[in-house]
Image 1 (cartoon, rainbow, N blue to C red):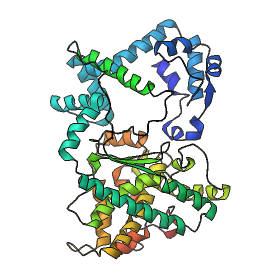
Image 2 (tube, protein in one colour):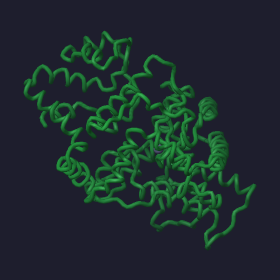
Image 3 (cartoon, rainbow, N blue to C red):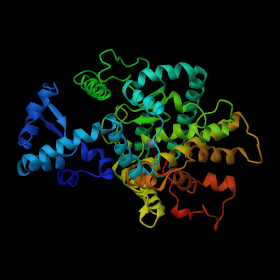
Image 4 (cartoon, helix red, strand yellow):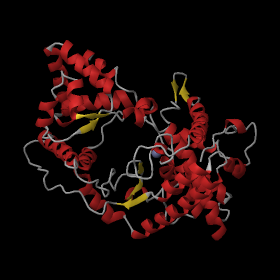
Length: 452
Ligand SMILES: [Zn+2]
């Protein structure tokens, strides 16, 4: 425990770890070896069969300084205990059921409040998913994915990119010089839908009937090797960072691409039978959200080519940072109990993406309405249903323990505040529902964030 705590103290916290510039510390191989002499890098790299490289990025130098010092001051006994503990802790879930239950009790019951383990068949699927996920993905795609959904979602991306362009051109706070660069970046986004063009090759992964633990070890070795094999090769732009069966989407700043796995192209995110208002408020907002990540407090530091290089004028950068502060303050003031506040800095990138994404999706929907007028359904106007569509995708149930963990560690705000926080900043929402001073979601004009 003392060893672990000594390593944790100099480590960056989650908010600091979002800062890409702080983590970009390039060192030559020789610099690395000389800076931390107590760490036997030569043996380490040779053991993991990684011998040839000139330089690498040390994301947390303070951590390595602390480790270097600990290795010279701690007793051999304590180092051994720490390593033994790590082997036990990472293997516990794959050992006998008494250990598996203890592992579940700590990580799920104590930390997230879950009282009951999932049935064995679900745990079996989860294990296969984490080891050979793209094999399961092929089965999933065969059953659920239709080229028609891909076509419709792709057309929505076109609409939302067009709306983003209108928004950027209309920004009153940004100079033409920066706008021009922003538009170049927007035009260069790559898109991926559904599943990878080329599936991962698992033929080198050996699965045997010796033991579950041994299979898990071989799987981690395979995963590690799969990652290391990319070294020194041209960037593989076809690679996916999520599985097709994962209900999620992402933006990669280094590849400047947005990726939508097959599983998010189904209700409640995308409903082929729903009208435009609902789909623009749900999958439209998600598309806008991912695009906005390219322009959030961290994504905006990357250029169109995916390199960490500023394209902002100093003046615009300052104005942008000032605008993001409003959002930081707003979310710092949301809380679930006296001692548990949302961390406005940690969640800033996601909150910028939520606000920008929904604003752009709304703009795109207004453009769509001109071609395809909406109608009142069940007493709600098209604009009202757009916002209801957004609120629907974030409804969830969370236990207090899990909520606590999420607030401390997740860069996303809890679902409830993604809705309340985003909508209460949008004049379009005030107009759609006739919100006025004194209403619960009313915020004074000067307290409302407005960035993209
Ligand atoms: Zn996001």
